Length: 371
Ligand code: NAD
Image 1: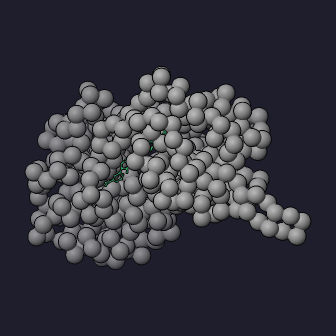
Image 2 (image 1 turned 180 degrees about the vertical axis):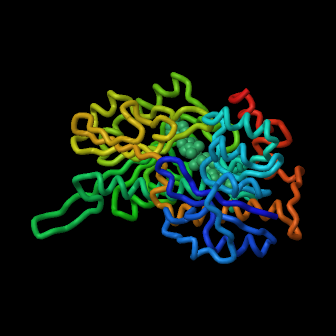
């Protein structure tokens, strides 16, 4: 099986889809690997760090020989055009943002496995790149919060008196939110968490946080949240506003699959926040959780700072690449048996992760968004 690994070209993307330790394992599985020259340099992995790999400067030439192409971000159209008809791509895609690319892959009969479609089931945990990357983002969000404040998080006793711990509120307690909560707590903040899925109460409490209970249950399909009704929003706002206004640091992570980020913090709520407070909006990629958020920017609204970084996992590129490469390896282990590439369509993970195959868009939601 010939595997090709691309150098990432999108703005702000520092990750690489393969690290040396994972390359060794793929070679043991029976893969012959080629990489684009300098693919790992953005995370300080020189070509020489990879053993028994062939380096190719031209990306079109690289993919034209491959059975399987690996990347983090979806490749550009000229790369997909250079791929062999019927070959395989493993990458994040987010079909609703890439309609033309998805159609191109359909027409070229590319078998594309979109990393964001890996099902959230126990057996697929080791292949779940959304989770591995979100955990890093949550950690980073808490650190960014700590350094964006002009105050400290922990209680500190000094010769001139004690400083009270900061209050950190995390809104959206999925993988990123729980990691943000845990990290803020380790840094000494008093932590509170809030989500619309009731099972997150126990998860927040196990991390030493207080759960802000709004009484709203918005569990949707597949363990995700659904969109809220106007009435539910009203009910939540009546409970959450005073917690927003008491917070020194707010970290937001709320998302609904395939939808723009829900707005959890209104302009009026920001206007009522404490002077010097900071919001770290980790949902900026989907438009942000705060009405004032400008994705990719740090803005000042009155005395409140709103920080909305894009592609946060890439800022921790070394570990993000390591975890991502392992996620892809675990997925490839389902597909390469006895050194042969073979797809078992009865396998739920393979059947649910596939985006395009044999001239068709296989994922129903993507098909609706694209065609
Ligand atoms: P996500 O990124 O889709 O969303 C982040 C959080 O935002 C979620 O907890 C969601 O409930 C919350 N949210 C959405 N709208 C909100 C609103 N209006 N107000 C407050 N919060 C809101 O979530 P995720 O981190 O990808 O995790 C989603 C689910 O998948 C969780 O139940 C998680 O435990 C589960 N999961 C399961 C596995 C597995 O079993 N393999 C792996 C990872 C995650």
